[in-house]
View (cartoon, rainbow, N blue to C red):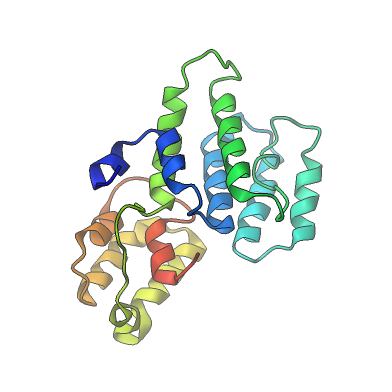
Length: 210
């Protein structure tokens, strides 16, 4: 797996292997949250609050106590979304992510572990590629892009991140291009019609998130 095509076509197992040791605790939790949201129609109503707390904790906007409260609130409900996303901060985040993705696949396949996993895996592969930049390539944001026109690019990226208004991503792409960006990988991601998610790798690069 040394080229772009391999990252674009790798299986879920291969993607996780490639990312082993390369994900921050924040990114692992956001991937788990996005995966659970993908399965959300099957979850109990209380899951939404747990997901919000887990995402806020990842973004340093919620406390470990709030996270623990959401986790313990889900402990007797196997289909509660808090279970796979509100793990304790001291847990190994990559192990917990793998556990969470296995849980989501089980939920998507109706807990029929002899069923066809592939449709569920394809949905999770898309999430990984949306939240993580291809680690086989080099990515760089020029300082001049971030300071162009009074920091317009960063301000717009921050607004999109906070509001989750991903329909504004093409505008961000235009701003990047005006700022001097010629990296088609970045511009194409901004202008892609694929669903964008909280933790989008491009926004993280611009905002210097881990």
